[in-house]
Image 1: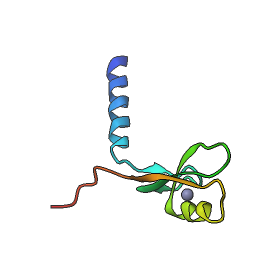
Image 2 (image 1 turned 60 degrees about the horizontal axis):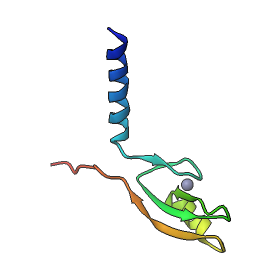
Image 3 (image 1 turned 60 degrees about the vertical axis):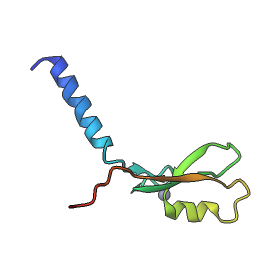
Image 4 (image 1 turned 180 degrees about the horizontal axis):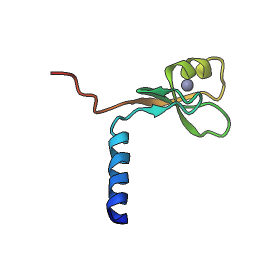
Length: 79
Ligand SMILES: [Zn+2]
């Protein structure tokens, strides 16, 4: 096996994994298929958090700002 073949194989596996579309919460690292895009502090950086963290961070937070919902795509229903 050549080095190029190995690199191609690794790239393929990476794409295969990303096709699952499951991403970790920016706050607690939980792997979820739905996340909320929010700002939670004065840095005004957008973060994607799971529903649990969203509930925690959105309550009584003067910096809280909602920027949309992220959903996992490509989940096919069984025939
Ligand atoms: Zn979380």
